[in-house]
Length: 167
Image 1 (cartoon, rainbow, N blue to C red):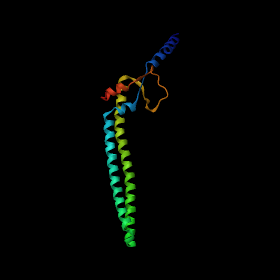
Image 2 (image 1 turned 180 degrees about the vertical axis):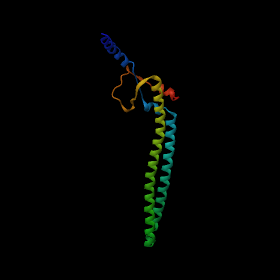
Image 3 (image 1 turned 135 degrees about the horizontal axis):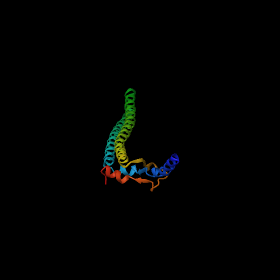
Image 4 (image 1 turned 45 degrees about the vertical axis):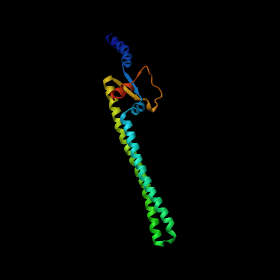
């Protein structure tokens, strides 16, 4: 008989304990775009990109100048000097191509590093809120989760903004 009462109590209280679990969600895209670190990172990346573009443009201008000079004089140059100029132009063109690729990789790396720092800050804030609030699971809805019940899940985006010192 005691076992039967215990089983009934367990079955009775099990649904209550399931309802006591807390779930949360937030929108990381909205959150990150409102962070001053994101705006600073974007400005720094735009400045870096402009520097790379200016460097490539200067190299392209040098190529154009040398090519035009070569074209204007090539008929009067001996073959060995023509070949040397053509080789220099090819090398300069190859340097321009390599510099463009190197700059693109450097820009992507800088972007990834800056975004990782921001993502880590958000992750730490989510973890702190999750631990303090007793959440079982906090989901990021930015990726397009098909359905979240607003009744069973709490939107913690504003709480995260407060935790991160955002308005």
